[in-house]
Amino acid sequence: MRPPLDLSLYLVTDDAQCRSKGRTTRQIVLAAVDGGATCVQLRAKESDGGSFLAEVLDIADAVGARIPILVNDRVDVFLAARSLGAPVAGVHLGQSDLPADVVRRLIGEEARIGLSAATPGELRAAERSGACDYVGIGTVRATSTKTDAPVGLGVDGVAALARLTGLPAVAIGGIGVDDLPGLRAAGLDGAAVVSAICLDDHPRQAAARLRRAWEEGNLL
Image 1 (tube, one colour):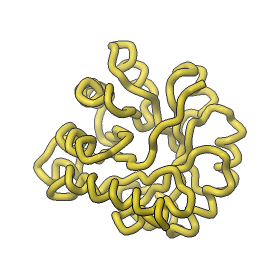
Image 2 (cartoon, rainbow, N blue to C red):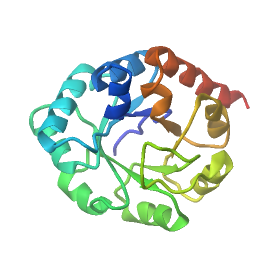
Image 3 (spheres, one colour):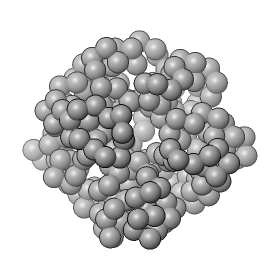
């Protein structure tokens, strides 16, 4: 039985955003973890396999013993990193990626699988597969970091979807610090953020603010 992940402050990286602030993805991740991020998904849509693997190895070596490192989409990169001894925790899949039950057979029972879901049907399928450790539900609001993101549902809409599944649920999509108390109070297990950390001039302090805001939701 895999122990539950702490999904409360879940950073999803964006290489272009990091570069736009004159920083590497590694620098952003380290700062975010120091500030309170509890989970990191490494996403590099524009990178080839070799350069993405190098980035995963570098970041996992730096913080993989402290928090779970998940690889977006690229099951091959996750498997390569694990074969090289990197402390990578698992993968996060989209609806157009390999099916979760197939990925489970490829990566084994100890690794983690997250799956993005945006409809009741997708949530039911994720639960029925028996392969997923959590779902990412969204989007909260329109976002420019994912070109195929569904329409924004707001905090209430995402919370309503989360109540349809017994899987741990992370809210995704255009989330800012003001959203976190309401998301936690509504029963979400975490909030996934991109721009709120990657584009902040002080990513460590941004992560700390987000962490405090999440904790405030416990009091609502």
